[in-house]
Structure formats: structure tokens, C-alpha cells
Image (tube, rainbow, N blue to C red; front, side, top):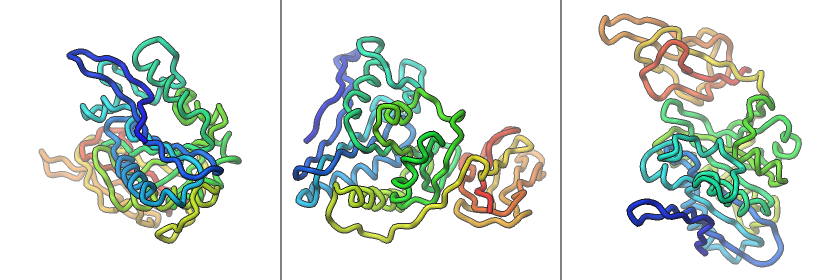
Length: 307
């Protein structure tokens, strides 16, 4: 059932509509919300929403509870290929929990929270931005790790990255929902402005697996579910550019690196010189790699999960 959770008039007889597909099965079970599209340049979640909507409607007899799918919390951003909320120069994921009857963006955020706050679980799907490629991972505040990690382990992802509390902004959707008692897991994967189908299928299987484990889904899960690696804040090393130039990667995310392995080179198209060689300073798993080639001194080139 398609439902509108927020509607507002726009110039030139247009409307801002934030909608969900509410799929309701038999009685019992709980309520899971799958949300994405908070940033208009993050499209990986669109494919996951399609897979879930199509599959669950064909298998409604195996659903015990409610699955609400929100493919576009920031539809204006998606329509205009803009990361933030167009016209307001703001990041949609920095205004929660919002406020009723204030600005357009505040009111939208308020209604989103109001609609989800009675759920048992929420999966908040993000892609990386256009600059980086990421392995499928959950990102969890250390303060909620005790309640969330065991559910994140069901999602068929590569990593669960437990962040220090200081790095988690209180104005995010996930923080607001967790504060209200909705077990909310942020999943990040792939790259901005693109869809990585194999990652979408993996997360789709993982969400089914979570639903089965908590009693919302009674059918089968298609693929084997992989066990993620749990990483704390000190378990990830950052590799930053030492020079400005064009970054040419020599490793792909998901590769295992030995100490001293070359991750990529920064070169000058003008002089033909190699300006800098980015190397792994310790062995580990390459979880993030630069996707956009133009870099400046200090730009993030890679993240490595330490062995």
C-alpha cells in the first residue's frame, strides 16, 4: 500500500511528496522500516528497495508483521542529482528530529520521525559519496553497540564498524530513532551516483535474514549469509594524499594488503612525474578506495582494516 507521509506545495504547481510502501502480512511479528535516499547522490538503496518491494509482495503469505519501505526521504535531491535538500543548502541527515510547522525541511524531518518512531527496527541505507568506494558495512555508535551489533551481524555485510560516540552526530536520522527506542542500523556500501547490483542483492538477502531471525519473515533466504568482521574505532587506518594531483589506484577495495603494498600513485598530467606513492603502513583489508581521481593534499585515499 503506497502512503504519503509528507506533502507540501512547491512553486510552479509542484509538490514535495515523501512516500512509503507499507507491506503488511499476517498478525504478530514486528515492524521493520527500510529507509534510504536521504542524500540525493546516494542511489545504492534504490535497488534494495526495489528488490524488497517486488519480493515481499510476491511472498506476502510468509510475512508476519509490517515492512515499511521508504525509497526517497529526499526526493528533491534525487530528482535534481543533489546531495542535500535543494534550495535550503543543507544536509538532510543533519536536521533530525526536525520540528513541526517550521521550515519545509524541518517539517519533513519531523513527519519522517513521527512515522517511523513506532517501529521495532530500521535499516538506514547509504552509499558512499562520489569520491569513495566502500565495502558493505554497518556503522554503529559505541553507545548502542550492545543492542545493535548482533542484528548487524545478520545483514550479510563485510564489516561492522563501531564508531566512538564523539563521531556520531546527534542530528542524524539513526541517532534520533535509536534515542526513541527504534533499533536503527546504518548501512553504507558502494559509491555515490551509481548502483552496485551485487551489493544490493547481498543486503537484500541480509535484510531477509534479519527478518527471519526476528520473526517477521518465515520463508527461505536465497544466498549464504556471510559473517561480518567487527571493527572498533582504533581498528581502521586512514591513508591521505601527500600531494595534489591525479590518483591512480593499483588496488581494489576488498583486497588484502601487506605492509608496504602500493595502493596507488598520485601523478602530474602536466609533467609526467609521479608525485607521491600511497602505501599500506600496516597489513589489513582495504575497505575504502578513492573513486574520484582528482585529489588535493590531505584528501582521503583509502581506509584499511588493520589485521
